[in-house]
Amino acid sequence: MNLRVVAIGLKIPDNEAYTALVALRRAGVNAAKLERAVVWRVEDTGDAASFVERVEHNEAIFNPNKHTLTVLEGIVPRPGEVWVEEFVEGDDAKAYFGGKMIEGVTRAHRCVSWRLFDEDGAPAGTDVVQDAVDRLLCNPAIERATIG
Amino acid sequence: MNARVAVLVFPGTNSEDETLRLLRAFDLDADLVHWSRAHTLPAYGAYVLPGGFAYEDRIRAGAIAAHDPMMDHVIAGARSGKLVLGICNGAQIVLEAGLVPGTGAERTPTAAFTKNAPIPKFICKHVYVKLAIAPDRCAITAALPEGALIPAWAAHGEGRLAATDEHLDEIARGGHMAFVYAHEDGSTAPSATPNGSALGCAALTNIEGNVLAIMPHVERDAWNFNHPDRRAGTAMLAPSGGSLLFKSFAQAVRRL
Image (cartoon, rainbow over all chains, first blue to last red; front, side, top):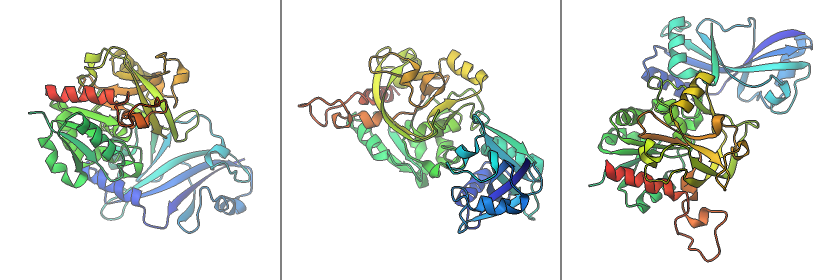
């Protein structure tokens, strides 16, 4: 059993991230750029070499025409990044993957990754990310945020 | 002269026309105000936020709209005692703006109308909501009879009230739960709640009672032709039960 983490982002313009950035800047958050991805933390019984291919074959979460897929080395957010996860009951992989299992994956946690950058393209500081979380990115009544 | 009513239209709002029609049916001076005309909002005495999918529900339902410049005026208006009625997506926006239950800071929600449970999918179902506070606890419900039962359509994927136990207790103890889901006979068993909403809650009001956020669409059961049990021979355009809340809202506007 291996824990693997994969981020699925967009290769087409991300309107949601743009809208969020506009709202954050209007709220006074000092970020110049915002990237969004869906991060899956999964328990996998399959081999590492085929993991990407297995995920890419699930059309419920990956469309090669619009998505990018990045296997993350760490199991925690990167600098300038926050993972926002909804409080949900259970972690049944089938429920998460639109009813279609990924071979070898037994459990899965889904969260939304927001990566904030400053004017120089460097990851935003923890204080800026925390500000974004507090002002917009996380509703603590239904979500938890983990900051890198 | 009666206060004017603004029906706010965000990108993605879709229930503005029937909402406006109903307000005008009660002789209110009401206008649609689109997001590009936010600066005109201070001239209005009451605000109605209709249903839809403002800003495509990006991030969370209501989250982006709560930061729209129009909401600067709505928040300021609510603080000064103006009436605010949010319906469905409008209720989600009002909640994300922190106006209900209004126990936290501005734009800092202490609860959410979030994914339905146990099945997190869109529902479209005829429901009844029952007034769960003293009518005059909220200005918008003040003309309703005690325990008023109002028909409406629940049409949402994210209408379940959720909050921490502490905040749910605050909502219950503070008299914020304006309406609960009920059966047609007025009983309030959990089976009447279509979406798993905490406390069976269908609507919230704030501490001052000038803001009401209601999830089911009362305006979609405002005329006989909307009503599934319409009796043969009744006029199609005769008011149906859902109009009761708007009638009470209109009386509240006239008191401003």
